[in-house]
Length: 185
Image 1 (cartoon, rainbow, N blue to C red):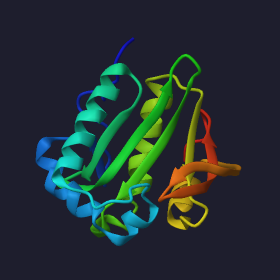
Image 2 (tube, rainbow, N blue to C red):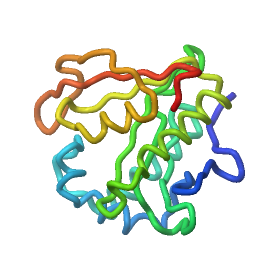
Image 3 (tube, rainbow, N blue to C red):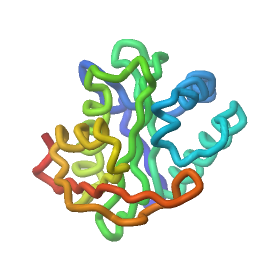
Image 4 (tube, rainbow, N blue to C red):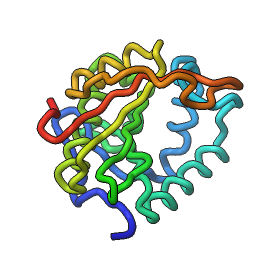
């Protein structure tokens, strides 16, 4: 099967809903990426512009069509226009039964469980509907909030990948977590 798509209606619970990104999300996306905490953990080294957001959304759509990733807007379950952040499956390898999970939150969405709810919804869909056998999640060793989200969702910390990824002009270690079927909390 080529391409990935969320079911209709998209996954939701009483806190968040996952939906495809829209052109109308660009201003909220740019505003969120200007947040110092988002910048601290982002690989980007230049300011994020409308053109960057439009380019990223086009790239997300192309990767989705190729079946390589699925990036979703994370919105309030009662107001789909209120952007809380983003969650995504990256490096989808259905032939190997695995993918990576990533997420970020806008400043106003932090501290109320939005990331945890979004990751749970995406992980449940990936494990149940795509039939994946393993989800991986990496984050910086100093990103304690992201690590807490992983643990609340049932991911197991496996270790540290040294000099794992290019990051802000250098390289960064990553903490590696995994989630197998039956472990989602």
